Amino acid sequence: MPHQPSRITVIDTDPGIDDAVAILLALNSPEFDIRGITTVAGNIGIATTTRNAGRILVLAGRSDIPVIAGANAPLSRKGFDTADIHGNDGLGGVSFPEPIAQPAGHDAVAWLAQLLDEEAAGTVDILALGPLTNVARLLTEHPTSASRIGRLIAMGGAIREPGNIGLKAEFNIAADPEAAEIVFASGQPVTLIPLDVTRKVRADRAYLSALRAAAKPAATISAELIDAYFQSTTGGESRPLHDPCVMLYALQPDLFGCERFGLGVDTGNSGDAGALLFDTNAGEISVAMTVNSPAALDLLRKRLIA
Ligand code: BDR
Ligand code: CA
Image (cartoon, rainbow, N blue to C red; front, side, top):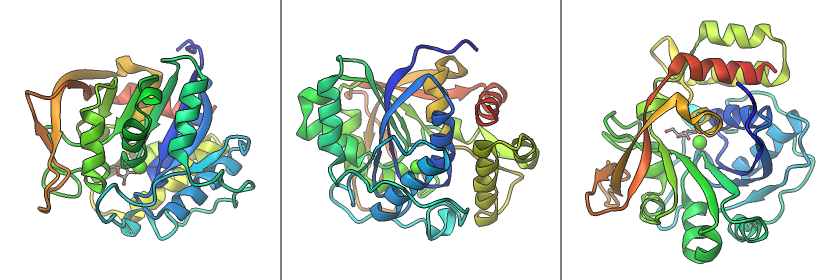
């Protein structure tokens, strides 16, 4: 695939095993001019997601990229803890170096607004891999800056698939349903990457072996991370690569087939809070519903072993 011109990119994330693989994919892809990693509480608390973003950057030799800590809790409810899946350190116990630089303060939202104001309108993309708390705050606290976002691509939700934290609720949306509702209603050019596609992009043991055989740092560490995911979850011969699908969509949208839906979010207090609701009165957003899985896995592997 010929490389597209590089686009200014911010990764908003809660690393997180699959977040880490997604970040490594982005760092190995010249199409992304990564200006910063903003962090959010999600898979684990904000101190750990922020530390992990710094650890991933050191491992990749990219400590020049700033890490800016964001929201330490959802907009209006208590966060979840997924230490059972991502480990107490958020990265499955896989060995990473410590961050070199301190995170640049605790104001990811103001930092994002400033970047959007400084760059030409429509040139800054946000790739969102966690709960949408920071993005929702950007939209509500800095609407003029937010209107300058280029692409907003977010992993979250389940349309025709069951959820992974409730009957229909998916983790990122359920972790902050109010934030997701703000984002969906914003009129921004949102593309949602739900479980309907991420569950179809799966790494099996043979895929891990191919990553390891390349003996390249990003591939080896990704194999270790996915291996940790195998150890913390039971059943099945493969594991879904949720967050890397955001980067894969940004790199090559034609790997995915999208439909447009008006979506609301269940913001109640049932066990299925965060479930997506079809809303014919809501403005439509683009939702990835099909994926060319072999081609997506191939692109991920090629970039990690580069
Ligand atoms: C999402 O939830 C998190 O646990 C993963 O990192 C991913 O962003 C999948 O539902
Ligand atoms: Ca995530």
